[in-house]
Length: 181
Image (cartoon, rainbow, N blue to C red; front, side, top):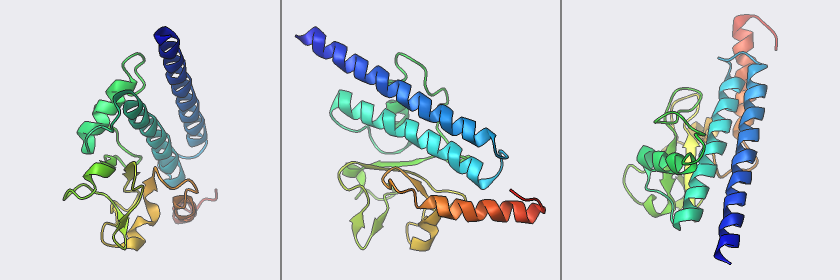
């Protein structure tokens, strides 16, 4: 009975890894069709990395019963755990499309000063899991300014509201260069 359960868990993890790999390849294929330095290309790379990190965090939680500790050390633990059989992530520290580290805080660390956890009106986003996000193109997480969050790329917003921001910035990028996209 235990071997069947282990086989099912292993099969599930392999399938999740393959799906993540497929999503990452899709994002990369899309990203190479537009200039590498453009806002949309950087957004796509960041979304792909975020998807991979989410899978690493969720796999870690499934296997250990808790999310890893907050910050880059927790992300490293999760990515090393995911890569224990196949090296999905080679970098020591994962960075977004603007070469900034991702912000990660499990819900247990939200109240910790300096956790980077975002909230509105005293309520944290993703209250039962974790916050994983990129501070985006402007380099400001928006801890104290809601308008600064418009370009944050997050793990908890399935409707991807930041894409409108990057569409505008992508158009501005080409307008400033005198080209059309």
